Length: 226
Image (cartoon, rainbow, N blue to C red; front, side, top):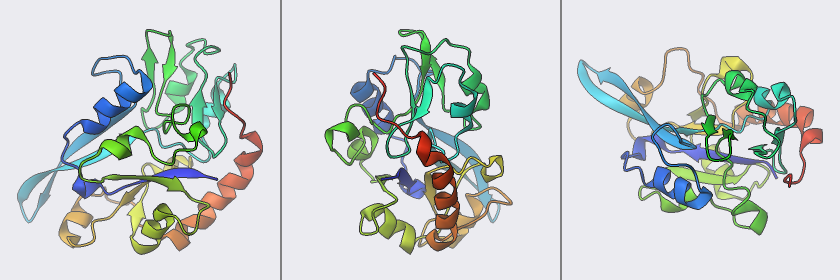
């Protein structure tokens, strides 16, 4: 298993249902600065006409995660399936992982006095055999699709095989597993919603990158820490 998520970002309506579901499911501390998932906005234009591009985001569960490397206590680690987790009981709040993360995906949970982040609902759903996350289950426009990159017959791989996509901050070398699916029927929006210099991939092109990073990191995958 190698868990990841595809984001059909053009379908996002910024309704915040995913954020609410995440907080409810995982007991996330309330507050605008306490977010495991969020929707960012950027101003763009097409033929001189302005529009706002919405980009749902969260921890990218990087295949080659720098946050795991810098943690001095092992609180940041790879769970089975390559999900990047944090152990709040052993976190010393040094914030090294927050500095190392290029996606600003971590925050301080003042209730536990520890760093928190998205877990793909690993400890509330995945370990119980469920193959969906709270954010995916709640989204009214089906923006998010969680799945297993090793399941060739699964919905995630079927989508990645049909659609082109990009990942964020590829130059950081983290091999992120949050895939942004380019819109199928609006090429103008598609090309104007990505940053200049962004690489556009097919799954056949990106799969070797994933496999190389997986081979490097899989020996570190472990069952959820108590």
